[in-house]
Image 1 (cartoon, rainbow, N blue to C red):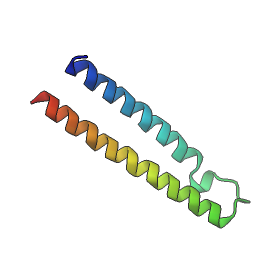
Image 2 (image 1 turned 60 degrees about the vertical axis):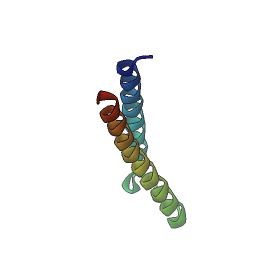
Image 3 (image 1 turned 135 degrees about the vertical axis):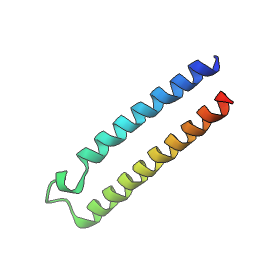
Image 4 (image 1 turned 180 degrees about the vertical axis):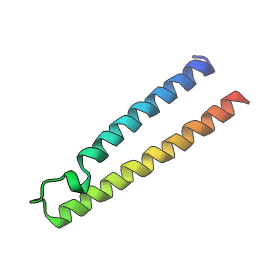
Length: 72
């Protein structure tokens, strides 16, 4: 696999991850959750969503760095 194919696959994988993370965040946004969900469960959901967001941003940085290294 050449560098162009590798980078294309990385970029497409990140785009899919970003789309899935965005969907999860939208579906589980505190205002979108049913009101009868206990506070502790809401907090756990928020913690998970923040982790997903952080991971997605970290992966974006990793891919940007890989692109930079391959293009040198």
